[in-house]
Image (cartoon, rainbow, N blue to C red):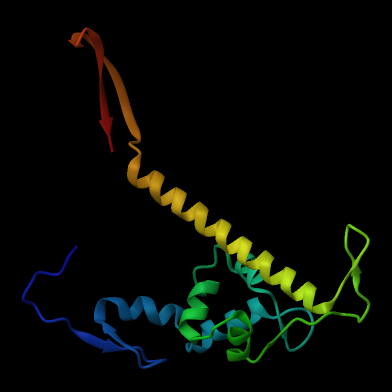
Length: 173
């Protein structure tokens, strides 16, 4: 519900990051603030890989954190930390990106070899592709929700016609 015009906005600060916002939003923000020790521990646990000190890729984090409303998603983490890339987000939480396990390169389907840099690039491309697909699904879902009527109940209207066609009554929710 919009705030009536003329009323001053009451401001409050997050007790973890000291960011100023309206009192209405501060409670929601504090529950997912990356400076909240509980949230920070949950984020680190979610983004830590099996190798000590290393973090998972952004797409792996997105998959692990999906449905967990107590931690921020990957995009929110990048925005909140001000990091330009996922490596910057990992650094904010004391982790480094995953490294190749061996110096031996993996063969490509064409019989060539991938270097570590090519593997990292392929992982980044896969991460961007996953984010793009998630964004496409979200946009399609939002468009469908805004532009589709969902029928609740349909019944015939016997004897009622418009331009010679029979009519029905539809109750929408």
